[in-house]
Length: 198
Ligand SMILES: C[S@@+](CC[C@H](N)C(=O)[O-])C[C@H]1O[C@@H](n2cnc3c(N)ncnc32)[C@H](O)[C@@H]1O
Image 1 (cartoon, rainbow, N blue to C red):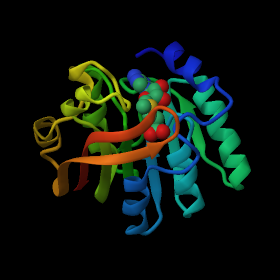
Image 2 (cartoon, rainbow, N blue to C red):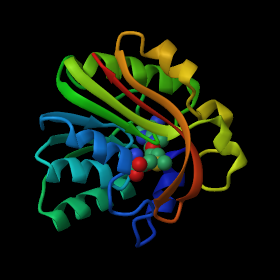
Image 3 (spheres, helix red, strand yellow):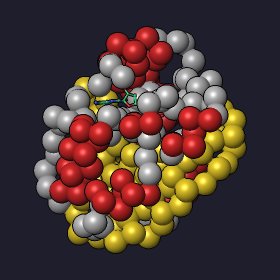
Image 4 (cartoon, protein in one colour):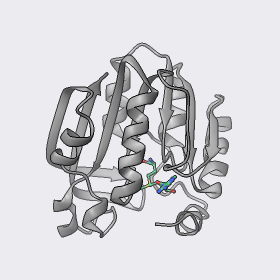
């Protein structure tokens, strides 16, 4: 989905996924010592801003300028600073071995840019760094509770196992749970959760 689709959604006055962080992301972050985190596709910034409140140095990016505006407003409201670039996931880059963590939270992309992004994530992580991911799996197509309706943009255990062989898998779960994240992610949801260490 293109930037203008997201710009239109994010031009609503409310935070469409809420101001609170994704629960899985927040729980995983609590287990780690703060360092540098990269948040691709950070949208309205709920996760990047939360990480900053926990002492992390945040490099976020997204293609949406409306998302960036709301993320920087949320950061100001919480009294923290984040770096938030406008960039395409297939083109953005950060130095190799520079991140203690990367979080992909509902970062749904078509297969080609997704593969490019996942390969970059592997390079950005420092040895010992962690990838934290939550996304919808194909069973979500049966729910009307959020996520893209294109199966090729949904995540499976096979996609993660194939793309992330360089990481040691700490957690890989496919599960159904109730999500309550603003207007667009609400209700019974089929997701995949992953944590891997470089
Ligand atoms: C479902 S939203 C999730 C936002 C945020 N991660 C969250 O959980 O609140 C997906 C985000 O991915 C971004 N996105 C999709 N394709 C992208 C691309 N190729 N490059 C950069 N951002 C992209 C969209 O602009 C949107 O903000």
